[in-house]
Image (cartoon, rainbow, N blue to C red; front, top):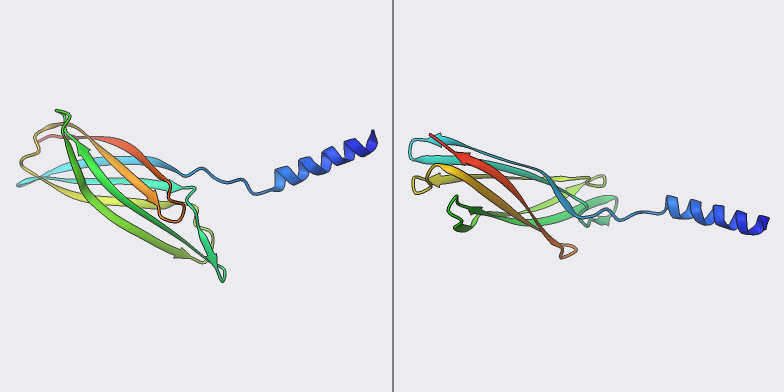
Length: 139
C-alpha cells in the first residue's frame, strides 16, 4: 500500500511540475475614435498571449499576422481596413504581444456605434482567433 501511495505522490508531483500549454487568446481589446476635419481617426488595440514561440540560442521568437474589419451601425462590413505582421524576437520568453492599429475613417462613415473585429493568426502554429471591440463615432 505504501508503494502505491509513494507512486501516486511522485506522479502527482511530475504532473504539477510539467509544462502546461497556454491557450492562444486575445484580451484587453479597446477602441476609440476622435473627430477630425474630414472624418475620424480610430485607435484600436488588443493583446495576444499563448502563441507558439521558437527558441534558438536562448532567443525566443513569435510571429502574428492580423487584419481588422469594421461593422457599421447598419450591419455592413468594411473588410480589412487595417492589417499587418508582428515578428518579435526577445532574449526571454515572450508573455504577450500588443497589436495596435490607427485607422483613418473618411466622412462616408456616419455617427453611430461601430464594431472593430481583430482577426489574429499565430503564424507558427496556424491557429486563428478573433475579438471584437465597440466604439462610437460622434461629432
